[in-house]
Length: 594
Image (cartoon, rainbow, N blue to C red):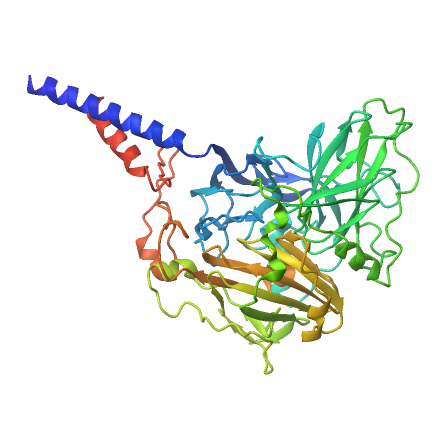
């Protein structure tokens, strides 16, 4: 009798737990889930067999397709022979730098382990990409597109396209990432890339001399008369690329989460780490296929001819193959003024709704008082402590063995210094774990001063910033008189031209520890980065989510890391925080009832 009562009680308790779990789950925003298995495969994108990083056996990896306010769950299983972290370039991970996937906030995922990312794309839309952030791995692959669609109740400033196409472009080396790392560690430069890939594929054989036979190329199939949304991201190592489609206009509509004033371009420079959305109407007569081109910019084009990606736009009624010379890039090899003016022409559509119904421009960033100013200057790599290093403001960043955010959570002292200078150091460069002390709800002005002869891109995790000014020479206080304080584009990655500066404004409303870096992989690897630490003095779960249940521990906290059972089908992880205990109780009760 007692056994029967106990059984009935347990069934009743299990029913209550299941009901609570279902009600909790459906009360939240929808969830999109992905499983990523990272492995090495052999591929020949430029006709030479080489090792690349695949996700689920594919290169590039799958496109994550989500909608505003979705919860995104990505389980990453690391089958590489080195640590891995995946970062979500441009995704702002509101209130949760725990999910950022860089060494300043997360311990790496060891080989043969898996870890589940769980974050919300709250109040966001737009075109982005993800990639592995450690050990130069992006140079071998592991990247893919990331789309955040608007909710159906929010109007977009254009008609629904006939299709949505992701295009990943980037320079590419036949040497894999480990060999490229060794080159940099030896104090050498990487040299000219071996080519440019479009969606992981080499160039169409438009030229028998420059392109060998047998290379697979990308083909995009379209229907005549229809308009498509083409999302283009530069996922390469360090080369700016000019993107164009033969005989077709590129109507720019969005970049990294902001709708733009719609303007037609025959071609657009896309710098490392940047993403754009174009509306392209198939309005040609389809007498033949058309070239899709991504060619190197700001280099000696006569020697960099082979660093060109070529794909094919194929109309369903096409009458023949593409032929003849490629469409010309901008003819400004020795004068970057055209490109800078093009960049300045990209404006925020302040009348369009974003992720929410209010117009994007209602923020009125130009009327907010600046609370902090940082002038970040890069210079050519220097030898520091016997090593060739890259710097920002005279500091070459050293990643700590204990992530900064984890050190704060567990009050580990001596991990970093909160002393990054507002202006470049005047003394010799140094290697430090030096971090910017951001003011919660402050408004920061950051000026990127590029004192090198090559193009740079800079990115801030966790934020979209307003690009308010660009100019040649040294930035001065008087440069503020040229700022665009009304409709400067809000984005996550900006270019800084050689011998020039770019100014951005950042509203520091996202609590956490956020990476500020160059997207040029070689300089990033050599130390050109820092972090912005933003702490709410009134600690609560409304401004920052608690440390996830499945957090990894390393460095000074490695003793806290429990072994992971890596046998198939046995790993159970709970990272929901709020209802993880419900799942645990359901399994516990279920065990008694079996």
